[in-house]
Length: 332
Ligand SMILES: NC(=O)c1ccc[n+]([C@@H]2O[C@H](COP(=O)([O-])OP(=O)(O)OC[C@H]3O[C@@H](n4cnc5c(N)ncnc54)[C@H](OP(=O)(O)O)[C@@H]3O)[C@@H](O)[C@H]2O)c1
Image (tube, rainbow, N blue to C red; front, side, top):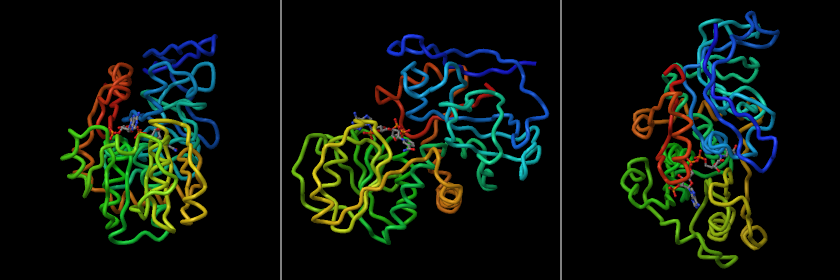
């Protein structure tokens, strides 16, 4: 028996693009090794990282050959892991999936049982995949801001708002009672962003150039998915005692700022890493999603594609062709 998977083969010349192809792989050993589970994958999703990997960019896949996909949702087929039984629905985000461990863009895979989170009962597998790494990271950011004390009516700015992290951050921020401002380069998405909970829309061009070290203070908190000058300006506009969560680099991995927001306004810059947080932090983020996420609104920003279309769809991330979340039905 074989199963289909999207494989990335690293180029021998590290500057050259990697090879990416949908291939058939031989079936996996059953029973699994102690601690592992075999999973029939139902859905994966495409995140920014997946888009980089599937378009052959170096840097995401860090072994010579690997199945792509940083997320998976599926059903346990066989388990040698405490806590997982055949038939259980499991979601895995991060833990090196699609980077150093076999990823979710495959019909079948092996996981370390400790990586899995139970799919919340109120969610379909498709919805759990639509949340994916992007949505779970948004939840980590919202948790971090809530811990910083942001309450009802707090002014929060979300950058990269029409993307995966941004859309789910808006939905969770609305549920937390915050007044959200969406920063976007796609003004044509303004109505959609308002429907997700944005009270105001800010053109990203207003934040894209280097600005003064301290600017008029407007935000109690921020969720930044883009980095670069936009993040520097957000820091400079954050109120005394405010917290800025930084989770992405969709615009720029560099950050050129001054210490002024930190030493004169006591602003906190909080880094968010979704790949390896402690289990309790990961579980809390999924509990928030289970409790607060408006699943009808999530469905409205979810587009579904087949595994056979995933490689081609990846390039859409770089020309503004994805709004919200792309889920991949790996059985098609
Ligand atoms: N730290 C972690 O563990 C973690 C986890 C998940 C994601 N991330 C990172 O978070 C970022 C967003 O991920 P995603 O999956 O949400 O990606 P995405 O769906 O592609 O969203 C990124 C958004 O950023 C904005 N953007 C793109 N290019 C830009 C540019 N040149 N200047 C300013 N804004 C730009 C766009 O929003 P608008 O069209 O609204 O302007 C775009 O929709 C990525 O860098 C990703 O690697 C990190």
